[in-house]
Length: 299
Image (cartoon, rainbow, N blue to C red; front, side, top):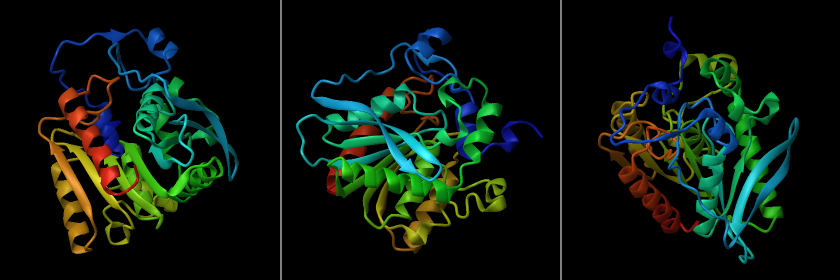
């Protein structure tokens, strides 16, 4: 059995090389590490987007959860008194610069955006792990029950910091995209979620021991908030058939969702630090995400 056969479908998309549609230049590993990007994802684009902190209050916080204090990175409009809260569900690579930059982008749009480091209990800095085979057992050991409790604790912390949790949203990428679907089935107070290429069907191994009791598709009847699903037609880990099956399950359950499938876009098309980045799809998806959050009265 090869390594790929053991991976969740969303991670196969990350580890399968994507053809680069235009000439790109990449940071060295040392430069990428110094800039705060993950190392396990491979080469980092020198043209990765950087969002400044002008007009924002940004920083690190600690949220009390079972087993300790969970680190979070947050960004919020500097002068907003009661901004809406948007959780940022990260990829498997830890709380690295891309996720922090997305958090700042959401703050520029008016949100109190918070990215929790819910893998902190491993005691390892996932941004420094270089090998996928070493990384995967750490992130796959995270039980859904613990994950959802960590997100609930982050929402409570946001409220204590002046965030308006009556206007609550969540946005996530890859494994974090799966988290969006899971959280939309969990929290009745969530207004909307945006899932960027999150897996919709879980591997059988993750059901063992009850770590991941139900996949997003299995949770379709339990969805409590509308979700925007943004997927790549050329994603080698999440086939279009998987997306179609989720659409059908939601329609059957009479649940609201919106979708956009980007022709030719691979997994990770929004990740501007990776070779998988596709600017046209990424720009359109980001606009759709903000519009969706506005329409659902988050932003």
